[in-house]
Length: 103
Image (cartoon, rainbow, N blue to C red; front, side):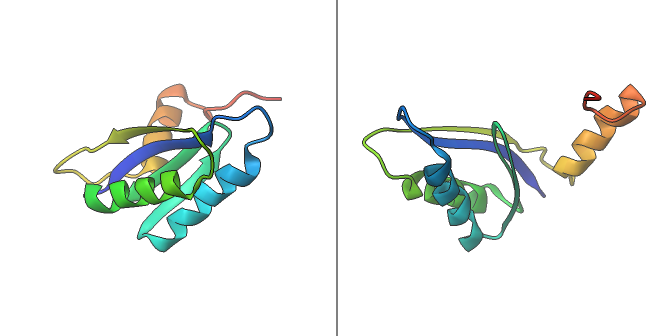
């Protein structure tokens, strides 16, 4: 089974959050997950929810600050293998083109 999630961890501050977000992303390295960061969060894939939740907790705890906002959205398609890439491929197949605009 593969669990896919969208994780967003950020300190509640006025200035740039990049260095704190980098700490959250770096914390994922200690776990058996694959991930890809995009402008709105980090997509994580894990074999089970235990590993996913542990990685998300570590990312949350890695961020310094008096207030940290974390959002975790999970797609746990039980009984069937899945991957983030296959989900995007399915949308692109339905579109008949890449799922992005031409610049």
